[in-house]
Image 1 (cartoon, rainbow, N blue to C red):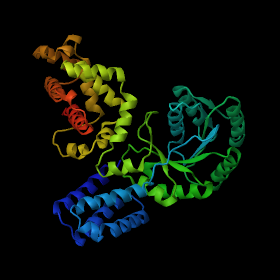
Image 2: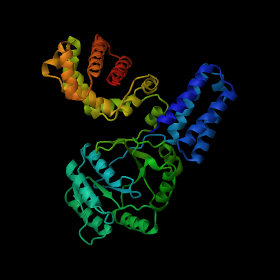
Image 3: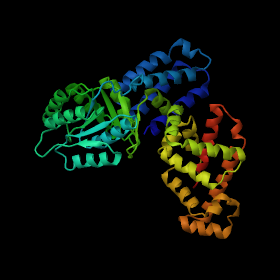
Length: 452
């Protein structure tokens, strides 16, 4: 999402580092470029003005310009201010009482119902007993969609009866939640194509009835600066407690994420990063600021890995690395686990410096298509070929190529990459510190994506 903004900001800082000693003119020119980059990212102009003003006051200070590393100091100031406009400290979604009512509001098409399902799964995985409540009686099949999501994640859904109003549905949902010891109640409300008084009146009545602990605005990141106007209106009418930003994995320029908190002073608590129901993450302003500036996000990467990686299989792989007995079955396992962690672009953005390095390496592609092709090639091999890649000769290559829809040359590339991985893992078990571990991970990720 922030690819263009991140690339432009990194270019600005690279220019500053190349100068060594900075003058006020150097910093002023850099700030103009940062301002332009933010405006092009569709960040609200008032937010940009305040952001640049705050940076300028600190970056042009005598202690920074006369420091030994002025470029690094300017980068530090920008990083700190980015954290501020993204919300400052992390604001968790805390279940403080039971039943805990969470009301989702937003315009039609922002992804409310899907987000309700994602949030239910997110909280269920944390050990909470969740009830989904459908109150959208206007959009065709809205309740049916929520029911389908509930069945998929095995969460109970309370739906309105025929002719029942959203308020009456909430009254019955409260009774069910209390009688059946539900810990969290997630209310999916109706949206409109635009904000109108009828919509707001209904939401206010529902607020009075349910007295929700959280009122979260679901905003589509693709709406850009318009997200600011939407957020303002909902906040004035309902006094929001936070925001869930959806489609953060899309082609949006990032303006919504960088504008909302500064405008309504309410935190972004969660973000949708994909289409799968598992693709909902806690929003950490500091981590996001680091990713925007190309500093990576190692903590989020570790958390993703801990959720996905099978500990037993990881130990088996470690033993194989020690014995230098890796085969293509292990290579396939690693690819499948990486796919579970999300899109490769997301993973690469979390490894410090790797995104910029890959972007500037010719012939290095990455995407779901390449992973699927690599997987198809290995799956087209026999068990013996996976365990003993050295036996793959010309005729075997042709058979594997036909079976996987690839070419013999692509088979050669894959085998070459596998040998590179084996060389990288040689002696890796002797390395223990985090810096060495991520140096290895950076190289391994690059190998996976060298299919042309």
